[in-house]
Image (cartoon, rainbow, N blue to C red):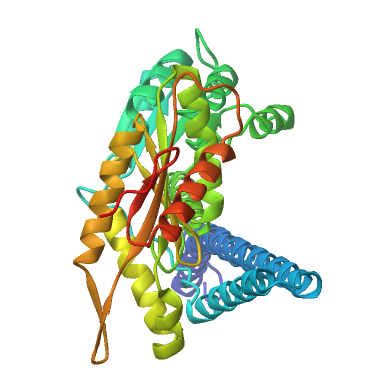
Amino acid sequence: MEGVHDSAHPPRKELGTAREAAVEEALAFSEGRHLDEVAHRLRLGLQAALAQLAESTRLLRERDVRHEELLASAAAELHAAAHLLATQRTDAGRDEAARRLRRVAEDLERMSRTPLPAYRAPPRATQGARARLLVADDEPDARELLTEVLGDDYDILTAADGQEAVDAARAQRPDVILLDINMPRLDGFGALEHLRADPTTMDIPVILVTARSDDAGKVRGLDQGAVDYLQKPFSELELRARVERTLRLVRSQTALRELAQTDALTGLANLRAFRARLDEEVKRARRYRTPITCVMADMDQLKPINDELGHAAGDRAIAAVAAVIREELRETDFGARYGGDEFVVLLPHTAADEGMIFAERVCARLRETDVIVGERRLKLRSSFGVACRLPQAGDEPAEALVHAADAALYAAKRAGRGRVVVAGEPPVTP
């Protein structure tokens, strides 16, 4: 009958409407899943971007601190020079104050001319310059998975327990350690304690990896010196981001450490780095009863160069002298700019006669070295003082060695400049 429909066979129009509704529902479900995935990726990308921003901010703050330290040091020198001018009535006192003022002015000029290196993310590791990662986990499947995920970009070392991890770190010096907490023989906390107690491994960054979610474990690991904490299960994207962030941090810290310990003009170590190295080397010489020699060098007649041609010409002369000294250093030697046109060199396991040979070699090379400024050819000359701490020496302070070399240097100046004097010996005409 017209107007009556069999319930088992709905009209074609109703079927079409139902199919369209089902398709729309399926599309909405699919789009919802897609949007969830997009949101998840955006969250991860935002986290990585925020991490890079935080790292960049930290670097800028550390550079600001470094510049504040330099300015504070310059201010202290200015106050000292002003005190000398106010209290010293002799020509020697005025000359010393003027010398200190010139040194501060030169350092400030160089600091103002030296641009800060812009922060930029380091390039990805390439073949031949790949970072080395140590993966320590007692589960073979976990080690295999991490090796598979990270092996395309890094050289992977593995360890099956905490003790193996400590031994491998000492022998191989990896760039980053991924350290599981729950392991036999020595767990992750114990391994981390051993790593931080050993001078050869104390600076290797450690990322703790664990299925534990308690805050106490995280706090304990971070207090012991871990740089990050990665909780299982984690995504491949998160793992890569944590490793890359840690490597960026290591590179940044290395660059900042070198910047803080290097004299910008000469490329040699600065005074702060020299004082730290001096203490280390004298302690080592005292412990193993070996000789150590200190050589002080001071340029002759730098003031006329500065007065006639300007401080830029003087800087070129200072840098040229530093280059000659640096070329003569052995791998175990340590050279630094002591200040102004003065240099200091530590020669471990070296007696006074060997230190004299080193100084005479540098002195002779400088006599043959010229610096051309405009149409002027500048002769480079320096005087040298040599002092040695003998194995049987007592517990005198490390600075005593420098003072002895400095006294020998001024003996060389008084004897006519351009020569080497060994502490306790008369000047020899070159």
